[in-house]
Image (cartoon, rainbow, N blue to C red):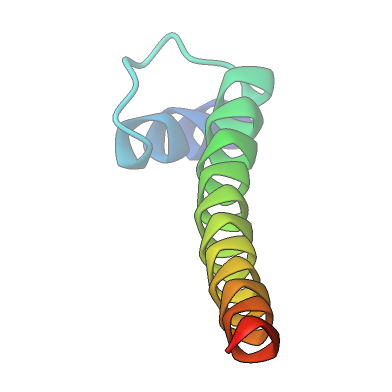
Length: 61
C-alpha cells in the first residue's frame, strides 16, 4: 500500500493522473533531461560554428 501511495504522489508531481506507473514517470523524466541536453548541445554547436566562421573570415582577410 505504501508503494502505491508513493507512486501516485510521484505521478501527481510529474503532472500525470494517479494511474501513471513507474515506467511513465521515468520516461517523462528522461525526456525532460534529454531535452535539456539537446538544447545545451545545440548551443555548443552554434558557438563552435561561429568560431569556425570567424577563423575562416580572418584567413580570407
